Image (tube, rainbow, N blue to C red):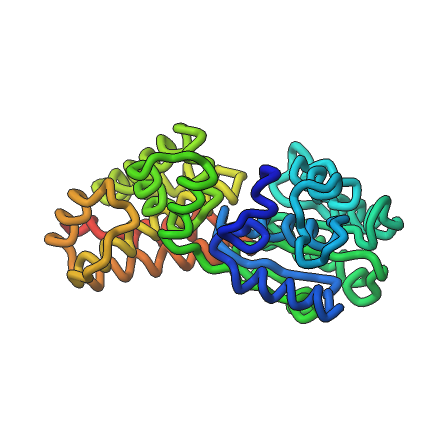
Length: 342
């Protein structure tokens, strides 16, 4: 997050697309009702991390006027923007780990128990918490039941389903929805200097994920990966049963479930576009650069086939954070994709 992202005139706290969440947190601060645990749920790159850091900045900002917090210019705000604030702690996984381990979580709990170095609070941010195994999640329970007065836990997750009820019941849950096309375009043009054509394209492709749009603007590799992901989907639809099983085996070997989740979310957006096109809905597709393929498929497939593929993809996405047989789940999903009988 850049310094001017913490405070921008066109978005509260510089967080685009989630004004209601900012307003909720701002009121909590104003009424002295800050919770000890928050669970921010939303799609990958939708803005969970940006909101978490802005919330920390609002509580740790040293500006004398509460209405100006986070100011974006005080030393505290600048350190949060650079990722170097001693009281904003990220839980990180080991190099050989695919999810946060119980040891990593316990280490974070130990750091949170220490008194703040500067302000009134210490923040512990736990990314991809929906991928954390139940035993490791359970390590947070005592901290949630008896939190240190200065400790605030922020759990970031794509889905609430894999998270233990004992965790969700003790957390303030904020469901972050995808940002509007206009919000994404505004960020890209006003904050990132994108031209109107590129901003419009990325806004459509992002699916409301501002973080993804910003990365794609600065890194052409993101667009290449997205294009390759859609090409892979086309290959799957044109492939035989054996070829689909082979693809499931390849995807099931990927230990990075976050990357697989991103790929499946891309496929899901394509199926949604196709379903809308099958029904002649007057809505621009998210994948506007694939309109020709969408038109051809809409003429060849039924709405039920598109819906079945979308639901099959969604089932795997929802279960990625659970202890599933991933290869088998992918095989079932791919067999539900259209094309085998054609």
